[in-house]
Image (cartoon, rainbow, N blue to C red; front, side, top):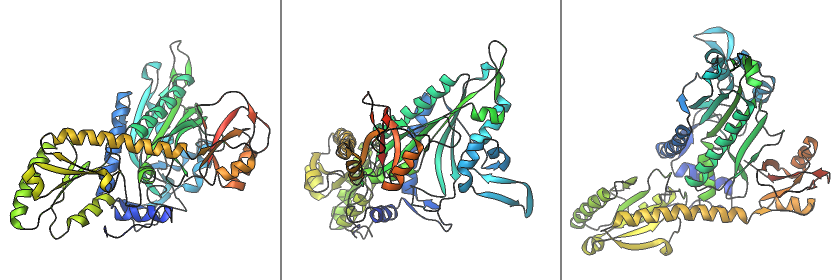
Amino acid sequence: MADEQLVSRSEDFSEWYNQLVLRAELADYAPVRGCMVIRPYGWALWENIQAALDRRFKATGHVNAAFPLFIPKSFLEREREHVKGFAPELAVVTIGGGEQLEEPLIVRPTSETIIGHMYAKWIKSYRDLPVLLNLWNNVVRWELRTKLFLRTTEFYWQEGHTAHATAEEAEAEALRMLGVYADFAETEAAVPVVKGRKSEGEKFAGAVRSYSIEAMMGDTRALQAGTSHFLGDNFARAFEIRFLDQENTLQYCWTSSWGLSTRFIGAIIMVHGDDKGLVLPPRLAPYQVVIIPIFKNDDERSEVMAAIERIREALSEFRVHVDGRDGLTPGFKFNEWEMRGVPVRVEVGPNDVAQGTAALARRDRPGREGKTTVPQEGLAAAVADLLRDIQQSVFQRALEFRSSHVHRPRDYDEFRQALQDGWAEAWWCGEAACEAQIKEETKATTRIIPFEQPGGRGECIHCQQPAAEMALFARAY
């Protein structure tokens, strides 16, 4: 119930998260292990994420398409690294219509292979390039350990797939889309991110180079919030995606792919939430404003609801919900909407009607500090200013939290200690064996090699060999 307290984040962050997802009615467990039902409130949040990303994709020239859920098994086997990387996670269909299938079908874990098959049919000349596609769909990856939104067997996402005439264009596209993700994360979700390159051991199966944005959660763990891959000509060679260039010479295409999924909802929960529940960034919140009527009898109810109807119309430019449910106290409603993270609460009672005012409460500052009384005249402008301030405030708070938990250790002992309290940025030799030892000894992984580097050279934090780059290490979801 909304009036029951959540377990505190500091006491048990994982259980706090689990309780909050269920009690805020974002999602629930499905009958099939590892799957989830996304409830209307959670889906509205995902729709707002979709809209914010889709605008950006279309502004950069991408168009949406849809591809099949089922992929012939032989397609995945054409790209050796790809099938090896995904083999443990595949769901395979062997019977259809009651009969054994001639060839097993893979339930889509990602679409590079079927995209490659179709690109080979469509791309014949340099005039056909570039191809810039985006898909909004669901995928299946058979996960052993699952957690709502963060890691589920089935999840929703977008996956972009592009084909280009040169390697330089394809890699530039992968980097451009990583920048789009970073802009979305910080501008819309108020989630600070670090951009960088994945290590060879952590890159996408079949990619030449993988890039990601990494975000720090409220327990200091890292979350890979979006990825973008330069695929080289690996998939083009596997699927014979070739074109005649301007010299009439047959060339292989160069491709990229990139994706961001419903796990980003998990990021929003864990970056901004508090012991009272969700704290949603106004630009993505399903409801930006909830209006709560306060009255004691039918006469008061009549005049309060009439005022609320006027206020609702005045706030029509925002996503507004009026909670007019009978039989529930205002206090119960306050707690419920705090749990669900609505950025601004508007309270209207008989005194407000008489004085032409309304009480505003901001979710990011619970209690008296976040409450103010304003005139109903000009309320829309006051709410707009408040929403902008909340958006900036939650971003700044998350940024300050991350800054206070990113460390630059001087030696391996400090490095191990730093990983108990956040992220460690340290010189790293780049060797796979060293990376594996660090992971075994600390349970932390190389999240990325950040684009922003200090310059110069150093000694690997683990093996003391010469190192040309600093890497970001963290325990991660």
